[in-house]
Length: 489
Image 1 (cartoon, rainbow, N blue to C red):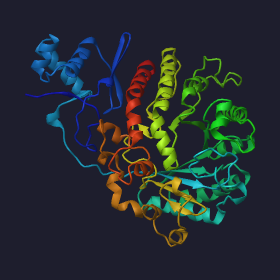
Image 2: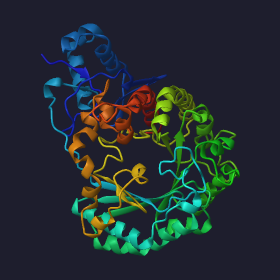
Image 3: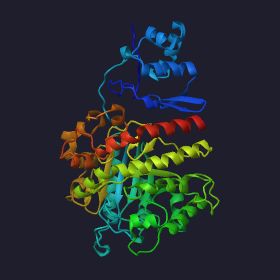
Image 4: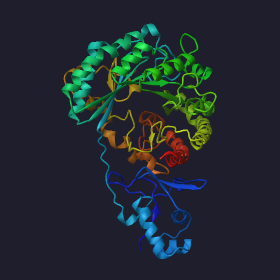
């Protein structure tokens, strides 16, 4: 006799066998009841009878058609029909049909992180490229000839690997400093030649900036070349400067907001990158209201006729030393509390009819896409700078020059991943020992592999504290995404 269990994760030919229940996939707000299936990434609205069947699977040991019928007092024919429907929508699965398979992770997308300069007008503590520790007069800058070598090698290598789409991240330091901005401008004609040379590859570009140097000229330039801005904003008003530390000690928040309004008026694509830290997490609820709640008095678009939520990416603080890692491990609870207060505000916005962006991605956690290997684990990520090329932009500071090998034509993906080849399987989330849900490992739950390796003294097979942190917020995140889809779709 067939038995049924709640599906926790994804069941396709790319995924291994696992069947663990996750109670919070069912969400209930007033009269509307829905269930989220990570298999299809869809919300299914349930009637009371379907809900009763799912509840019986959660609460009862009866996993058969007869057992469900007895526990719910529903006729056998009704149970059989509804169970068939729930299986069809992949809200429950039949273990007898489950197949165990091996994952082969071959991406068709890749990213190139270009560190144009080590110089920056900010001195953010724990800067991923150590710009906070490098005096401005000692900052190295990438020269144009070397940059073109990197760009050609990256596109050629991507074509050899049959990669279909690439994203170039123009970064620093601060890429909009005059000397590094000129490199971005000068690279556009050369990039157009490369795209014609490798026509099977589509190109996307983004400038990672603190937003202070955005002006009318760069805004028009970016719009013309379809380049998007990603602006780091770690808080409102004084909180931004406390977290980011401008070198000139002048207030930066109002200038950044002014430049966001400029981007809106010109129609240039952008998003904000908000990094949650133990120190700013307590302000997250206020921050999210000022960015998304168009009815709130603090909404940043009030003075500029912006009538929609500001596009926002939420990330978590990435420690850059053993000391910072130790402190963060002890203070994840502060970030968790701050996130929950923000989630409460987001729920209010959705119920008020404010159509915020999807909540399917936060930090490395990607609910709607398979991400067994996060950035920096290689295979689809290359970082280049004045000193050479590596597989993780956080390693650009301490590296050996390998430009000669790139010039000789070595595939840049193979080059930067030489040290990781023997550990490749350990970088993939499916092979990590996740304490609770296998699902989270397939969707970016492993976090930054570099930090996981440091935290676990070189053992990549063990999940780190960030995985536990993801698990602590996963249920709320799923519920909010369910609520949003029910309200607006």
